[in-house]
Image 1 (cartoon, rainbow, N blue to C red):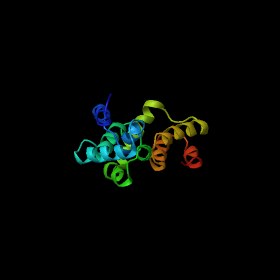
Image 2 (cartoon, helix red, strand yellow; image 1 turned 60 degrees about the vertical axis):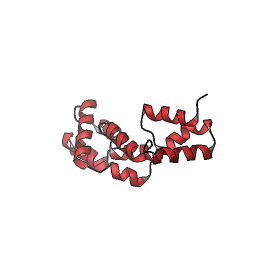
Image 3 (spheres, one colour; image 1 turned 120 degrees about the vertical axis):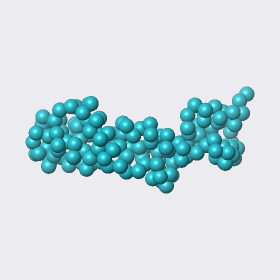
Image 4 (cartoon, one colour; image 1 turned 90 degrees about the vertical axis):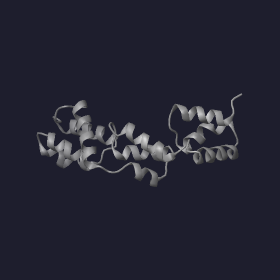
Length: 153
């Protein structure tokens, strides 16, 4: 039979985990007190770190998603806002470059009409990019400024 500590170490060996996520995964295998004690011990020994998890998470997703989506995903994983803010620095130029690359790969051509403009806008919004970044990309690639004026994110 696997002990709680062995199970936690196996999970941590596979990938970084947030404290809240690891607690959730261990919940059915031990009491709340045992899990809290184990997680505290793992944090003190440096095997479990929300900061390291956030850094890894941001690095792995920043090429595909905007800051808003990454921030929300980290909150869902139980990472506190201070840790998120430490590792998710708002770099508008990098976010713009990422959004533009994704837009080019997905669409590659300006929206032909208002419906296509809205479709492209929704795609970039769903990826977590800010309204100002989206508007800039779509405006610079639109044949008609009518779409960007009437369809602000």
